[in-house]
Length: 219
Image (cartoon, rainbow, N blue to C red; front, side, top):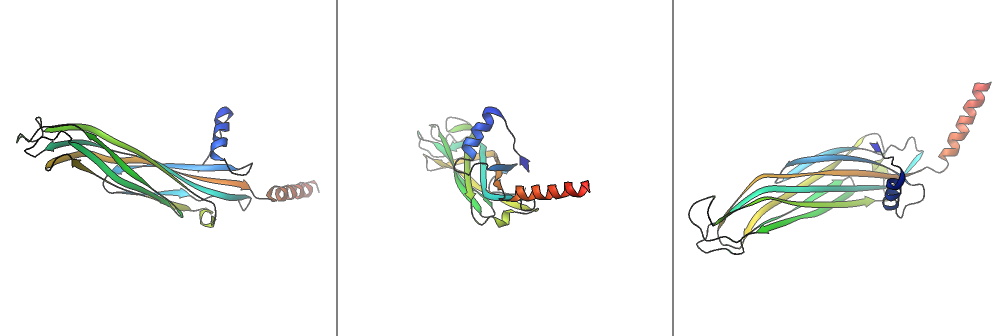
């Protein structure tokens, strides 16, 4: 787990955004992990550390899930109809879901491109009925947070984040076509943030314990 420490303007900006609506003195720790692989579908499991409350001296007040992802593929398509297709287009659609214990979020994947082509010339992968759309990409992100029932997040073990994504391409603007995709991939990252406060009375307990230890050493 990575404890974040920034200074100056960066610290002020993060404090203003990350802790808006949280009690003064709220601190946070975060962990980020990356994922990537071929579609479709895509499934991955990432193990994150639980929140260490340091013997009850820290109180967890919120858990936040954030993720981002990029879907990309090289796409070519060909009109196999005897009619021209002035509105020939390829369309990417799908979804991604990320869960982490009681946190969950789903986001849509959607993009497309169009290029008018002529009727089929009978020759595959070339000619006026064919178009190379290049690499098509779509970016998505999601967020969820939890403020109650945080006990399962506390401990010295791990909790798994589950990523599932499905997507596919289709052709519109013609009644018959051939589409080919290569390097159909998804990549991204998941960030888990624990927001916490010092447990009330913990500091004074530590002070009393420390004072007692000092007195014992002096005897």
